[in-house]
Length: 132
Image (tube, rainbow, N blue to C red; front, side, top):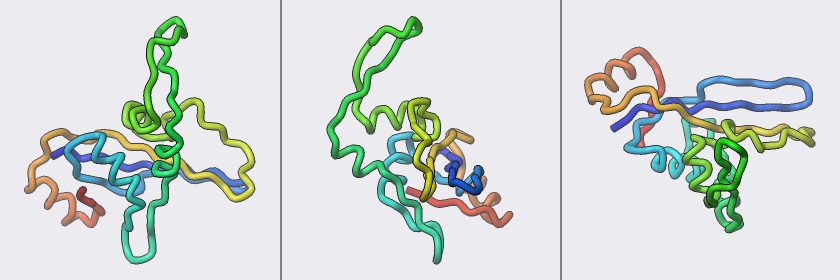
């Protein structure tokens, strides 16, 4: 099992917010993507809503560019989000028409092969950790 931090960036006309939303114990980046796609409930009053399900259904493909900006392949939306570790790491995301705001999610690997004892230690500190 690996420990990931789930990050958030929210942009709106009058404010913005960035930070760590929660931590997640998962086997892989694909598991993190699937967890976010499921629109999980963090606690009693907070849910995570992502466009992952809807964007996956579009069946669009995205070009993959090499070092000299030549197209070296194609990938699906899901493959792109897993490779980039979330839409907040996607340079092509447009932040326009923010009347209602826009929220982007992403993740980072904190620790590979985390042990149950380490997870318990972090939870005892009062840090929220979810599992897939």
